[in-house]
Length: 94
Image 1: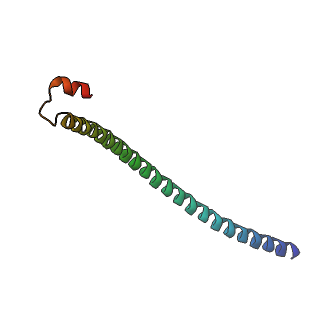
Image 2: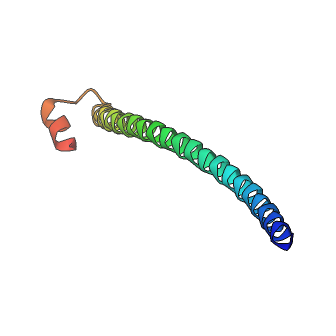
């Protein structure tokens, strides 16, 4: 009889331990899934930001080019504001 009680107590202890470990395992799986979803979201965010960064770099380069052209035209207008402008005057202004 004593052996039966000991076995029953061991069985109860193992069952409790199993339930606890099952609960911990489910929590760990949920956490892993959340981390995988977060990683996927961050990767998509990174790709999107890299594309935006490339677009902004291109826009900035074009803008700088346009600013340089605008500045050059402004210098030409300043140099040539008195109707005495010729190609030599414009070339020396640059």
